[in-house]
Length: 386
Image 1 (cartoon, rainbow, N blue to C red):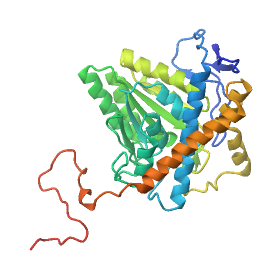
Image 2: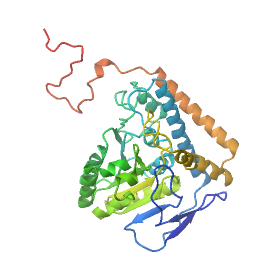
Image 3: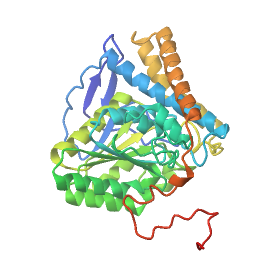
Image 4: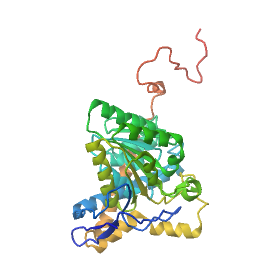
């Protein structure tokens, strides 16, 4: 069993990272913090991971805190009827989000599902523009027409959140084919939930990516639950990373509550895709602290499971580790929290003050280019003009 250790400056505690042996995660609790589990990797000792600077670790913690406070504010705004439609939050997945985004270059492409607010923030889109989109305002990242599930920013190379389960997976493979065809060095990352691995488009896309050597990294965020059904009850092979073996694709499962372990595994996947134009399947095990969406009370969870979730909170764990390592004191953590909270308050105020889209723009983005005979009739308009 290969082992490596990593440590932070100021004597941050080292965590043992093992190539195999992580057990499948349950429906709520995160697995032991044991690093990556690999399918198809060469044997032998892995190279030691470099020590992390205090500045890097505090930076990751701040990004995780920004996502947490953003999502908490979004949940509040939903109850205030400032956000409509569906709304799915990244609460509990902050370490996974930050670790994945740290592995990408600004020029790399990202496709996500509908649980994508944190990924938009991690891609460098401002909290103001993301919050304004949730509020349905014209200053939002999709000009107010996308809402929570459909964030899109071509400049940031975030090519959409998709409301249809798995809808983004074939599109990501297509984008990777375009990169390969043009001879670019960009990588496409495609994020999805565990339930997506059961649909046909997932397997078709991995098959094509494997056949054609596409530079795409498929990332499965396994929170143990497909809505309210556990992975163990819905998947004959609950260790989802093993599905890459059917397509001779290197694959890894990693502890999604460990931001550095996620970043390291994602870097390996991304750089393999970039240097060798080979697809990769990465599974992260990350707890979902709340229900499937903001309207889901998660009554399918027992009292014991809810208690286990508190212990699996990646933000609380990292805060404790940084404090014990002498990197971030309690007072410094409070200062960071106040700073981030003020940033989110400003984002909410910006969204509140932004205008709604003009009704005349309703059909502006139906097609990418003009289409002859396109119907632009509003519900109150007559069927035939006089």
